[in-house]
Length: 225
Length: 213
Image 1: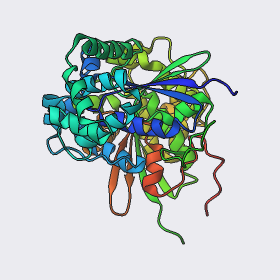
Image 2: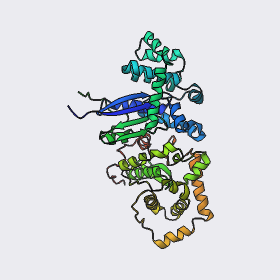
Image 3: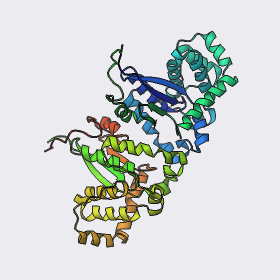
Image 4: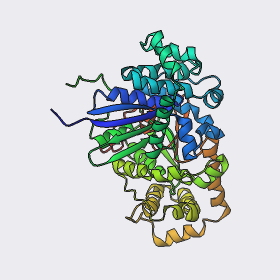
């Protein structure tokens, strides 16, 4: 048996389009590199509050820089389209229920976490659809392969202490690693742990792992035994 | 003769280590890709003032993220070492004279701009200092003129140009393609730039450039 896979933790929030970019690239490489990808649903609003940072969109000139995420979406082959009312989606609607739902999905059906996360991103960052109403979240869960009944059960529990605390713990863990935003990728190597911020540190990550970078859309993964 | 080279403008300040990373990668690729690299000395303090942004180091948790620039320095093979008193260097000393000096170098000796810029980055951000090849006498002459209106205005114009492109920080790379102009912020958009140019990305340290006729 070869060397043990290195753990990569990805702290993400579906409200963050750059988190989606990081997520897709890592999901592609998790079957190519010798890594174990741990998805960690996090609340970006909590990161901002704890670090004293503010969402870039609050600075006018950064808000105008939206073409960046669109260009990256094209290059990374992630179907990002900006919502019509970008500010309302980010600042008024937020992602609290969605991230609590992903938290309980991770607790109860970790094998569905990747798909449900993707469906939520597709709603808010591709099709400009809501992710705050119960029926929105149910729709995403169903599309990911969860039965309506089961999805409804989990949704009923999103405001229980267990789920609220778990989301808070994950958010605190990201903060302890030094996060001031999302996405954050934490790479656990033999001798060192690296915290990398942003979707644009993947080539560097490959270098730190001693793995090969084949661009953001690598050829289909060869199966690993 | 092949297609005309596309113009890339790099707005940079030697006070910005990420500007150094962008600069080195683009200097490597300028002899590989079909581009014309225009170096534009800019004042990052002016960008911050005009955009209302603030240097990341002012947020405590971003200030702690300094390992990022070190790791990138290693990977990009740029000898970045953090100055002992990082905050003093950035906020007290700044880069006004240095960037005015580069402005006049660009006006009077554009062929030396790359080397002098690199020499200044080496002084601020690396322990090694090399000579850029300018005679001491000539350097002194130019230095005497850094506070003339001509030089002050040129630096201001370049900084304003970056702001007009939408800059809220540095480095900013502006790529002029046939049908569109792209403004890219940061040292981490070079692979994307290659894609936009229809060129090949061979990592931050490409094999030595093949000579272009």
